[in-house]
Length: 306
Image (cartoon, rainbow, N blue to C red):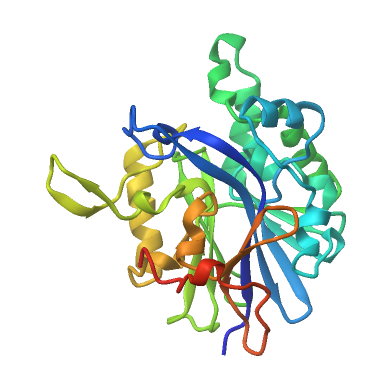
């Protein structure tokens, strides 16, 4: 029995993004399309999200334009494609505080937000630093951090200090300190609800950008199956590799069960369709008895990159 359906919903994209930002050391290797997405975990009468995207207004719009994000659409428009509204979302797991993941909290009035303690407090520390150290705030909208503090004041923020098991049945939170950001969180869904699950999925946030981060290759080292950490990190590439190992171990090293939401090629691994907004919906798995909400693109079998 599967408890949840999981979807990755695209809400915008960067048409050409430096590959070196996605894969450490991939210099002069050109550009790739970078979808901006969030994930939905949908159960029986219950729905949660992993991240919330950003609001295309004020400084969020400035950052979106700076990164050349195109075809942005609101959560109301995007969620409607799977039969939900922002008001239906009761929980949001914030993987990290970059603007494209934490920049739209006001769109979800009924949600309780979960974020790592170190993630929130260290961004507050970074905001206090002199302007000459401003690079540390790359990708951060300071107003988002203040909105997080307001969520705490309104008793709608759960500050998580390390891993948390069964935050909801079969859903666990894990943390990778000093990696992509100060305390990046990933979400593990044990979809059969068992402690020793045989049906686990990892929603990796920005700890993984592309399939190659988990199954790369090196001609120099003559290795065809190795971790290549993401190119954007405020912390340690070694910590990123160790986090990759932990995530992979949680799914029995079945790579397709670690979901990189920024990966354009999710349609090669999962049933997907383009919606009426010209944005992709990928259906990662279905709860028992749930009907599919997508069609397989171009006859894709969903079995590449396993």
